Image 1: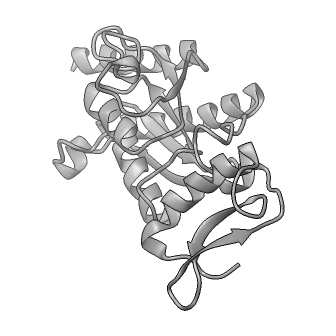
Image 2: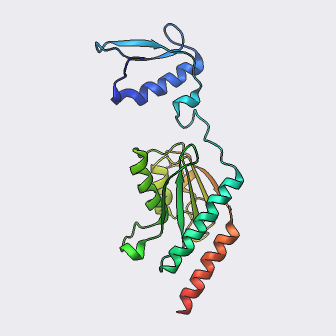
Image 3: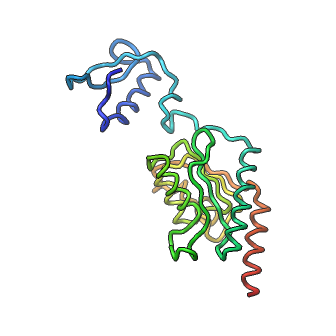
Length: 217
């Protein structure tokens, strides 16, 4: 296939997805692009699964089994425990790509870095963006030990994160179903798949224990 103009690649792929699904177009299955002479032309291609094109809404979000989620969450809880010993609220997060590989992780670091944005989710998101080379995470899953706050939930929506999995819910500040649900708010331009309660008891005990010790000091 001739190289497509980079600036219009996403639009072409989106159009191509529809054509691949409906079988419409000139000369059969394919999509519009540009030839080497800059003329718009039709590229006939062999039928492809929409999965190959990798766009959210067409490709189903990759499934992650419960044992794998629990294994990742257990790792995060150990990381959060170390964070708590450093004086930070014990929260940790990891971003997994479509293959289930870690592409970014983070823990709370507001106190250490004097950074109001130093929440675990945002640290993991920033690291993942640098490695991912893109700000969109449609096929990615973020795991975090505490339900995201409004700031973090808003950032995850802006980043088009496909799925968020958290351990402990937060009825006071949680923004994915706790005190509010930004994922289903009319202002949300992206739909996030949300799952809560993975190792919730362990996470809740860890947080309550940390705050109890904090109050005793």
